[in-house]
Length: 304
Image 1 (tube, rainbow, N blue to C red):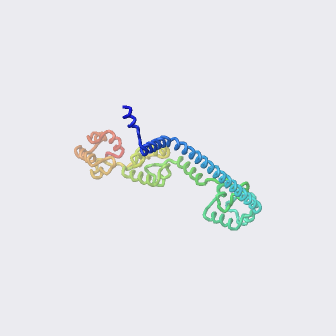
Image 2 (spheres, one colour; image 1 turned 60 degrees about the horizontal axis):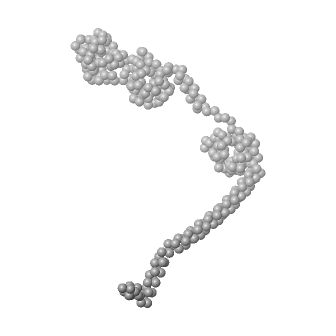
Image 3 (spheres, rainbow, N blue to C red; image 1 turned 30 degrees about the horizontal axis):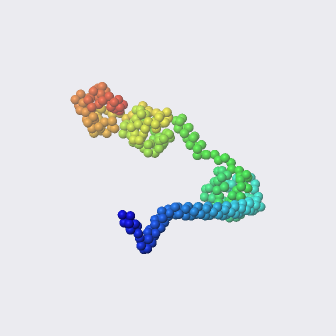
């Protein structure tokens, strides 16, 4: 039996070489991850160090360029201010409509004066010092020298004053909604041409207003607008156009904004039945006329 086992492990030369090769391959496969990790670790460290050196180099270049730019800028500004001081001889002045001779006396060049005069010719005005600073013909150094000498009188807002005076007049005058024209309505706060036209048109359809609250029936008119003008307008009692219910026809009566065809016909039919109306109570008793409607329409009806 021992001989059989011995024969089992008995290899020839070629088989022994093959076994050695297989073992070498196995060892190499097992060792590869370790050597690979060590190699990549070294490469990563070298790459990071290289990247850091590049960043430091770029920063040094940027700082150097910034220093050069700053030096150039300071030199230029200093030179520009020095030139401006030599040629500018300032005195207290108002840049608005200053004669060309005065600009020239101050040291401005002809082309600068021409730019300023063109600005004035187009309606331009200097209301504050900063307006003069925005003139492209004046350099920052020149403005810095001239700024302490600029004197612009405070401008009065004439338009605002006139508008204020107009509003004061509006407050002192009561406008009769039944007799005024569109010009009178326009003096009321918040009433423009469109509203004035609508108010007059609706007033004509009604036959006049008996209450200021009827303005709320005008298209687009709201309570806020009414509150603002309520103290400055009134309703004249003599401005209403009355309708004689004992003579009016249905087609005429239905034209009133508060009445439709059926209500107008009911009034005329009741008159025919009664012969004529003798009191407003008889109109109130018509079934189509409710309390709210009667409270409105009675102001426009008369019994004769």
